Image 1 (cartoon, one colour):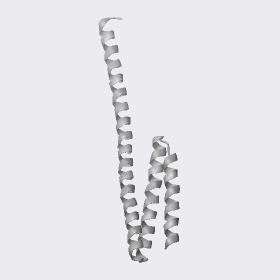
Image 2 (cartoon, rainbow, N blue to C red; image 1 turned 180 degrees about the horizontal axis):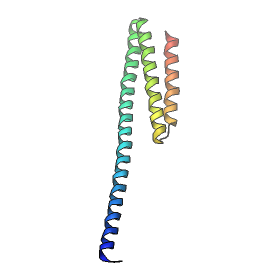
Image 3 (cartoon, rainbow, N blue to C red; image 1 turned 120 degrees about the vertical axis):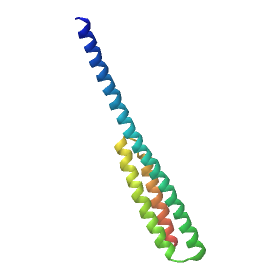
Image 4 (cartoon, one colour; image 1 turned 90 degrees about the vertical axis):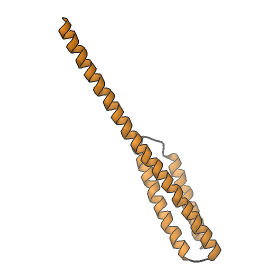
Length: 117
């Protein structure tokens, strides 16, 4: 093997290594983007949960049925976002057991509030 062949082989190996690094970086960036979307979804869930608490407080203070319907709308929105979070977490290979626990807790909270109304 002469010097020219060695240089060509080293160049080819360098190109393959650079392509492999670029592929890994692209995959990591994609996964990081998905995780960022999940973080945004969790923040949205927090906002909806705060709205649920506000609906509960307003209903208990005023006993106005319009707060029951607002509460139900917010529960539906919460459950929808929670389902999206579960799906995205499964796609990323993350444990979704805690999401199931949150879902169960939300069902109990919603049912308890509806029993008040």
